Every structure is written in structure tokens, then in C-alpha cells.
Image (cartoon, rainbow, N blue to C red):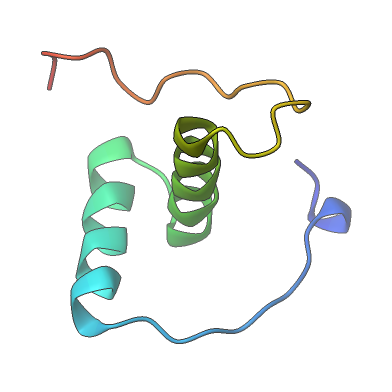
Length: 65
């Protein structure tokens, strides 16, 4: 995704959510912004939100670390 397709935004996170976002980014080898975007897409798919959009690939296969 190009930067031209991105929207600058600002929001607050709890200290715990902030640490989890850092941990996800480190574990997946991506930056915080990418980790947040993937998390939103993953949760939306899980909840059946925006089913018209193509589903993102699974983050990890279950049972693998």
C-alpha cells in the first residue's frame, strides 16, 4: 500500500495495548503501523465486518511460532 493510500490519524492507546502493538510488530518483523493495520483487518474478518473486501492472508498457521 502506497503512502498516498494512507490517512494520517491520531488516537490514544492504553499502556498495555501499546506494549502489545510493539510486541506484535517485533514478532512479525513489521512496524507499528503495519501491525495495527493487520490487527484491524484480522479482527474485522473474524467478526464478519466488510465481507465484500478480499480477506487478508492468515497471520500465522495455528500451532506454529
